[in-house]
Image 1: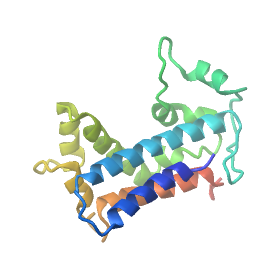
Image 2 (image 1 turned 120 degrees about the vertical axis):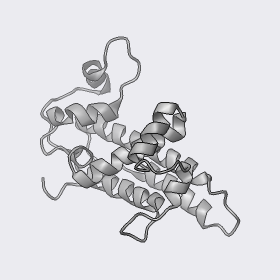
Image 3 (image 1 turned 90 degrees about the vertical axis):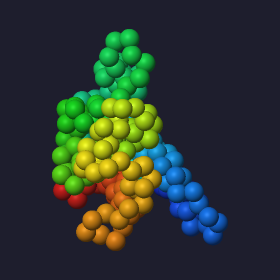
Image 4 (image 1 turned 45 degrees about the horizontal axis):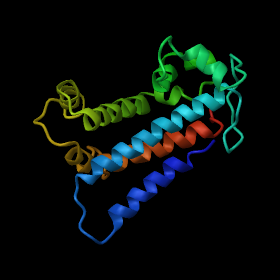
Length: 189
């Protein structure tokens, strides 16, 4: 397992945004959404593969506390009755410590910087995906800090305080850092 699909998606959008033609800035929402979906898939794939003992492309596999024979065995344990979908992100957040020693997913669970970034990105993704009143309110409160509403692409293109990076670049760089960490032997392990 590797993060190549995720990196390829990021590169596709970098190519679009670096073209000389005029870009509709609302495309940043689509780019962010597509990249975040690939990131969630990457996390799910890593979780599943690590849980059944498969290493990453770099040979890293965390020590397992629980041993599963295959994906079917894993899914029988983590899937709730009468549910076809397993929300791996919630499983990772709530019980991945039960699955691994030196849990590589701690970076998104307990690292104060990255867990906050992930939460922000999920709020933005949810608003882009649903545009419901609840998602909008959460976006206004969590991302805009109760300032007047602006579209997600406007937020993504604004400069993050204390840096010279747009939020879009800041989030994408964080996704790359997290994905690289998860597939490589953690330094603190």
